[in-house]
Length: 58
Image (cartoon, rainbow, N blue to C red; front, top):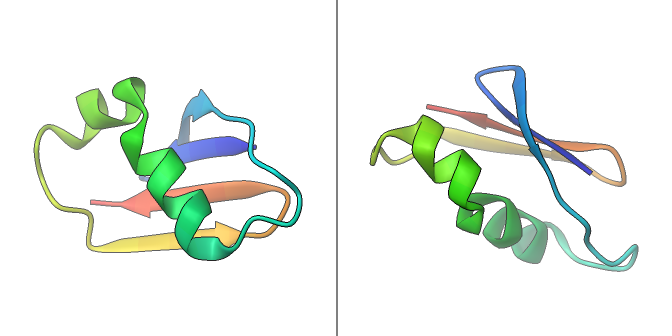
């Protein structure tokens, strides 16, 4: 699953197919590479498109 920060792919992660949105968000936000691009800021919005991608808007 691709993880985007401000619509740019920053990481890829593997999650279970049956994982709910909250666990997918937690996995994406826990990524070290994503944290680097968030620069310590809290994301304004996290969009999960099941089975495809997670977009984090800061």
